[in-house]
Image 1 (cartoon, rainbow, N blue to C red):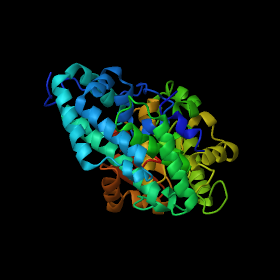
Image 2: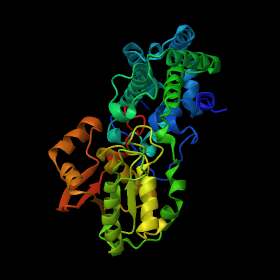
Image 3: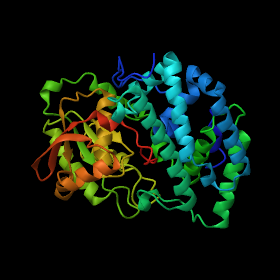
Length: 409
């Protein structure tokens, strides 16, 4: 059984100065254990450490790691609070030192790990860094992401986007505290004696997301299947005929129980007109389960239905991106779609929306927010030619996974 599958059922030569041969991110790269979607999207480093046999063997026989394994196993057995399982600064520093030693002593095995990391694109923000820096930053990101989840869904505090990320239950209630205790006991019962120290904190973190019905990042995955008709069509497009590779339409969630808002419909109408005018061969509709909290509707899925049914846009010309919850990630996730589907990245993407949103995207405020939340700007050379149209060049930094945004990393 997959190590984390049990959670969902019961709970609804030397350190190189630079990488000699740095593999480019590979859109055809196959993830290890693809069914483990929440872990893969948030913490792919942990998947690699667990399932790459060459690396896993190194970790299991390391005497220092064996001590940490025992420490965390004891901690789990005695804990009644998920925050007890956080990866403390001392553990983060010690494991980083261990990884640096392994880079020196076992270059072949660690080289396999680094190749997977670079090809996956999940660590693209560090792709130009030396191997040692790439590994250090990836480990720190993973540890910070686990700690964020453990804290946020135990206390319902410190959430990056509290209105849409918050716990689904009153965290101070006896029933919720009892559910947390049951989660810890279940993780303890299902933790193998050969598990690595980070696996139990990770399992508790994933359990907290599932308990709070925050599995959004795993819905509709893999997108290659959800968008199979459009992805197939991409391969036969004569790109010279089009000004843009795609039209991006960000969602606008309704504030009530409607499946699609009037603002969303308006954006769809503008985009459909642009599509029928031949500006681009595809429309990317972008937006997840956002407003109101706990909505069963994903903005992208509802926009596609509306455009096919009412605006006569062919279904295989519409690509759904059903995870973004902010304008920053509308752009970021559209770049991911373009890269994964095989669209030419030298062509601009045209963002179609209302004037207020596009004014925001073109402003320094948007740039500042992207730098603060993503550490990069997902679109380069942003140009606004009209109130309802704004174009940008895709930036592959957008492939970087963001473990501090677990609903859409």
